[in-house]
Image 1 (cartoon, each protein chain N blue to C red):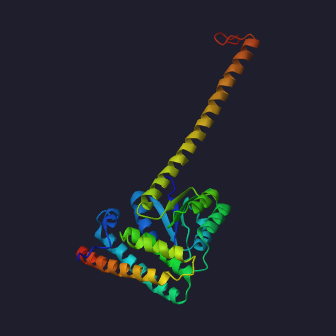
Image 2 (image 1 turned 45 degrees about the vertical axis):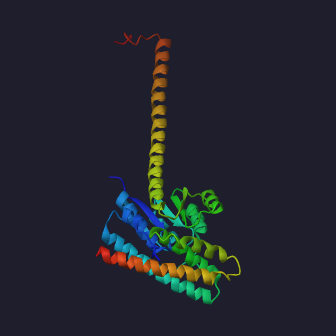
Length: 172
Length: 116
């Protein structure tokens, strides 16, 4: 059985974390962990999440808490393979560009449609992973079958060189 | 004069698929967040800490979106933008926001009672 995918929800907005957790639980079979600061997320990064939903503003509860961009950089340094979906209450293009530049998979503005957008992102990531897997399998199959074909051709050439008929070889 | 509602639970009803327990829980969490935010903003206005006022107001924006409190959103945006100025516009903006939030909370309380 495939291991349960793990997702971290990192937001100082408790209500949003709860709503997103409810929404994702109803759509996917995921292990969901919530954190109110980026520092808590980093402390638990060894739990190896597959996805992280990270908010930009994380200092409403703890004023000294780092912002989402700094946490994103740290996550990418420690676990570059994790898919990070960046959340923000603001739709400023410069923030969106920065998040993508530092390795976020997508940027989602927090509003009524953000739950559906995050759901779609997770579906797209899953499709992406599956496509990558299929591409690897296809490459391997092509390489393997190509190898067999080359081996047959070499064998046929060798048989011809040594004058052995494949239909009626001399040793039969 | 007609007393128009400032909140609209259409999204919340869709989101919770009509699950009243979930709706009540989410409205309850919103109450706590909103009340806490209003107290905090008041305190930071007294301290003239406009950065923190903007930060707390920012957190309210998505909450208002989910509860359908559309009239609060432009005021929150103005508060967020005013934090970069001398902040003189913030107290008046906050009073407008507070009035809307208090009205919304009364409406939501009525809705919650109906859900029981």
